[in-house]
Image (cartoon, rainbow, N blue to C red):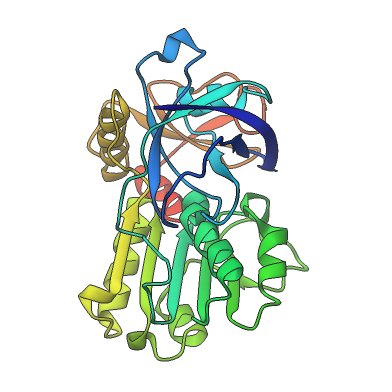
Length: 300
């Protein structure tokens, strides 16, 4: 385990922050890989780890993790500041690996914070001046949920990169980009010759399952589809939490219910709602919604 100092914390969106860590020696990883992260200075999380994907490129002299606040562990991370530390283990994972061994053009489909492995890949491709033509299809609930929006605008200026944002809720009147879920119509319209591309998909399980189905329907071969759900097995309670998240989305835990914040749209699942929304800080703002409606919204 390497213990690294946090040198900066950047607020990306209302519930996402990027942590930059100083490294004494370069950490060798491939864009798309993740590592297990722990908070060594907090006793209440002693021995607990969470899997986080590298957002930085291996070409940079630091590492970054872009983290969405989703539970107690990530909330504790959001409270950390510069000078504090995070522990990381060795890089792992191969499902979404992207580097110069990939010769084909590629399409990245991201749901929410599932963009993290792909921003690493895009930064790497830019730094290495790779010739692959790369397309990003990036789905979010609202415009305020789009991570790296300004950076994606700059990457769009490169001749080999095209990034498309789509939002499914609260669409502004002046919004000129895509709207609605990523579906077959969008894919066929935005990506010519889909069968010739390598496809990478990262997001919540309902979304990744839907994308796999569409890609097979339009003739993309199985070996050209690379998928990773948000839930990556880790250590400690991470694997247990992943199973709980799967059960929530599959509606298996019938003793609990879904709630939605009337102010910001945050989805909560449990026996009772928090008095204060962890996302927008509104008080007593939750209302019960049907499980199917909640699952559809979580699909992005």
